Image (tube, rainbow, N blue to C red):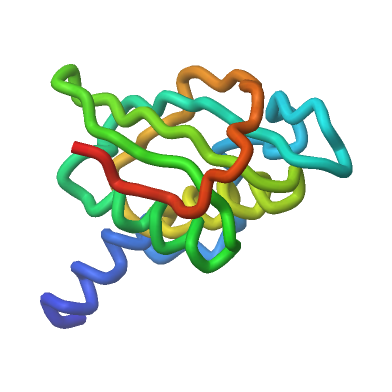
Length: 128
């Protein structure tokens, strides 16, 4: 086994094909309006800075036509608000965690709360 094979095996969790437990239960997210507009506020902790997290979140939100924002904090956490349908927000979170599943570092959704939607919001922004 060459260096790159070992590296790929280590990066993917040792090469095991066993399914991983989900990092988050998207059905437990506080999304009160099953058919209308929802806004979710979340704080991520762990290894979520320096790994392209904000830009990955923006790309996924744009793909799913969701709005909101994402921002790094000095303490190493990342805060975001995402707005859209409940199913869209669930897909967003699923895709966000899946985007980093193969890496060895871990982050988690430490806080999640429902917020009032912001009418007229047009896009998802990376804030500084």
